[in-house]
Image (tube, rainbow, N blue to C red):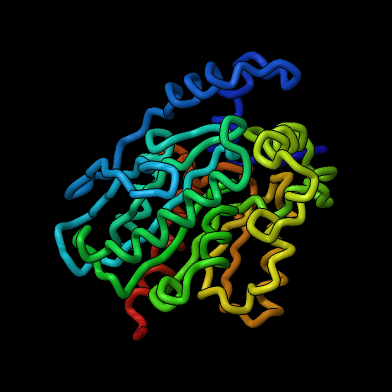
Length: 313
């Protein structure tokens, strides 16, 4: 179908189009990860007062993480961030500037979590790491030099799925201090059956075929397709979620499931502000510094975070 792309996205798409196509029937996943991790877009990094690699104590060992602080202040709120990458790809490094930009825009510390990846670690491994990291952050916020009463969760794509799932299944103590949830085009439906898979089957940075491949790597059993820890549209406790900000890309196989999730949240009474970004495709927000609308989405999320953190708990 015809897609009128934002000029910045079109320029990025031209670069991607020069790369050899990926054969999903025979993927060398370690090589693909190495290529993705090495292919960072050249852009000016957002400066931080401090960046520290730390370890989160987990149920199956430690989870690598990175703590960003835009300024030195022991009263900064804390945002726990889960990166995208289809549950298979990406790392702390691929989303480094994304996290820096969020920290600056939200005037908060950001804890980026390097959860276990599929297919070596299928569902519920990534979910368990996200849940563990969030609960650990709640318990250790003060030790990290942050305000233990003001936390938030965020994620893009697969990370948006993990952030929402961690919020949905948070402990009572964690729910009490969870002020906001920021989701950038979250993966919400592992059946990959939404109408936008047919409307937008081939977009610059994600195809319908590729997304279905990602889900197959992460969700190994048919029963898991309806597990509410991964199938957000089947979660029955959404009314208890905190206020939320969602970014929706115009050209995205996931668009219809994101819109359906947002509609369900609104009908359940959740304070949600969903914003559509025209002319952009899935993944655009991680291209901050290169795509103008990435900055718009991050600045909007940052403003919503600041308001949530400023409100009385």
